[in-house]
Length: 348
Image (cartoon, rainbow, N blue to C red; front, side, top):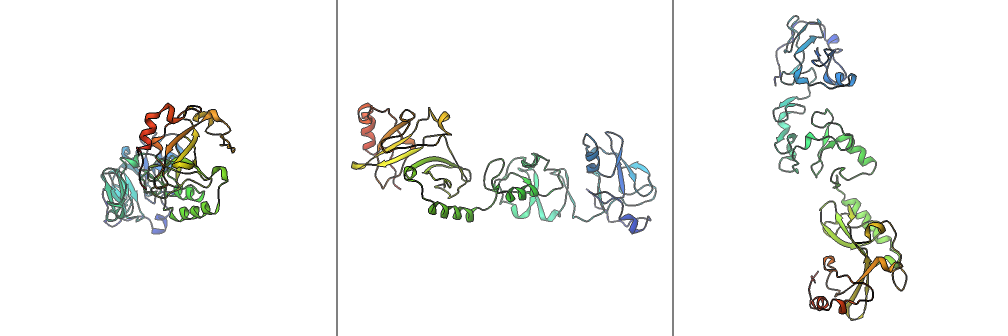
């Protein structure tokens, strides 16, 4: 990378110089594309008008925009002496007359803007990041070499500002802003929340409190996976959403497993009724229906009996299933004694 500070040689007046360049760069040169031998101001102009892309580092010839002299790539015109750009990088074949605090990053292999003192190169992410993210970001190996998950355009060489969310997956800033505008707050790759959602979670807490469930659904529990803390848990079913027991997030989803309804009975026993895993795939989209006596589809559900005290919490991994007509204490008498003895019970 080279940043030239030598005074510009004789050339046209400044009013004429300001008109030289394209929509992407202001410069006093054009390059000869090595792939199709055509002349363009910059690589973006080439890619927009051709059915192929150009590697700017393979460019070997330039055309002076002042005197139209074709020559090898260099800082100044060999005929009129004009400086092709106030910023010149002969490694990237980049010329720019606008001051954007450009600098060349050897780790990225390209020129960046914003100032070398404001950015550092992360070897794991293989990209330049702001200094405030040093030791304060989640590293994802070669993350910049992937495309934006929203527009599917390149991120590493893009001139569009990229956004670095807490999960570490990159996306273009305009794409990120459009997602928030349409109410999409989760990362398109890992579904982790892109912004601080505490205010929304508090609002949903109020919605859950102000939206009581019908009697037949009040004691229903489901297994969930939190997409923010990546932990599983068992929570009460509610139409508003499922709140994670660990981090309080509503960015959760159902996991494969039964929908459990809990009945408190005398003697300290609890009866659980839920879908069997065997019938889950074909019944997962059907709404649960109950009556006062039993479930409407007795063949699609199993009952599970287990000793439970109000001071203990539900441990879903300790379920024992049995068919109707074969009570647990008769078919699995040994297991029943172990459960009554305290196996799988955890204090809150």
